[in-house]
Length: 79
Figure 1 (cartoon, rainbow, N blue to C red):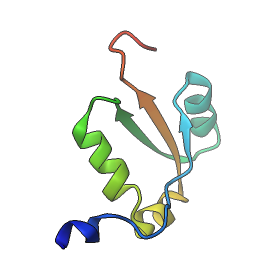
Figure 2 (figure 1 turned 90 degrees about the vertical axis):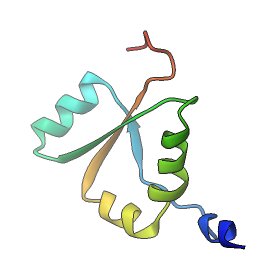
Figure 3 (figure 1 turned 45 degrees about the vertical axis):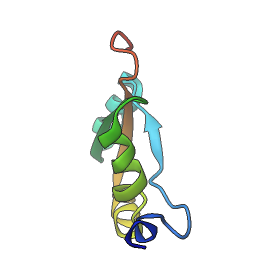
Figure 4 (figure 1 turned 120 degrees about the horizontal axis):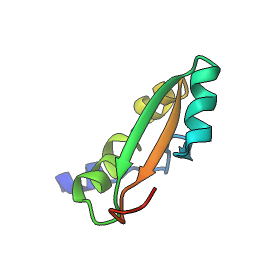
């Protein structure tokens, strides 16, 4: 029964942008606060962050104060 409480009843998530130098520099230039999330498709803790932490309504609402940038580290040689 307790596992059911970990499954969000509605899907909410922050508005992530794909990390790029342009997006990063733009946020810096506009004096925005930044959260950078490094993730990979094979990373279990990354999936837990997306499924539990980044889907929590309180976190999603707080993230509206930040520019969220996701860095895809699925391929170790990716940009």
